[in-house]
Amino acid sequence: MRDDRTVITALPAQRMICARALHNHKEFPMTIQIGEHIPCATLNTLRDGVQAISTDEMFKGKKVVLFSVPGAFTPTCSERHLPGYAQHLPEFTAKGVAVACMSVNDAFVMDAWAKSQDVPAALMMLADGNAVFATLLGLQFDASTFGMGLRSKRFALYAVDGVVKVLHVEAPGEFKVSSAEAMLAAID
Figure 1: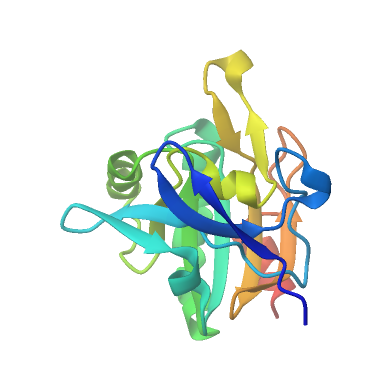
Figure 2: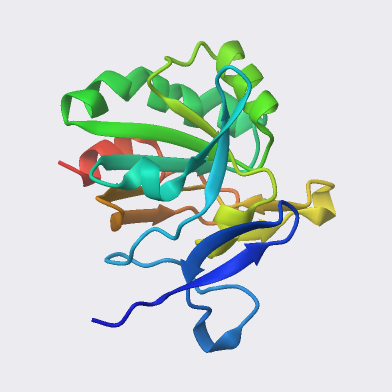
């Protein structure tokens, strides 16, 4: 079996991370597809200071729903997306599925957002501060026109042992397929 992973450097953090091979030598990889392995990257969370967590560690041997929002404290993200997953967390847990929320924000912002939304501790709040992981997934978008820089598209994925089984990416400005309800239905 061919190994499609290569090592690249995340320049802002000067860390080595692994990623899918860059298709056709483009600057960014194509969007991750169902059946592919989650690329290896480092995300951050706030627990007794900023803690790094590798995606390999997060997904290996587990069932995980990862949903991503364009920004913490933004209207749809705060009013519908995150609250839906917090509300339905017991249903995911009953299925043996861990849930993680990711945004292109820092770990301190993600922690403050979680506190402001009364997010249960079991729902992981992950910071992709430089959009490295979103870019490796091919799910980044440039929101510079709105003064927000590089961001993650709104999406949700379900992975088993690091392999994507379900991938729901929202059209710009939409909130339908990445909701907690949509993901619960998709993994039944």
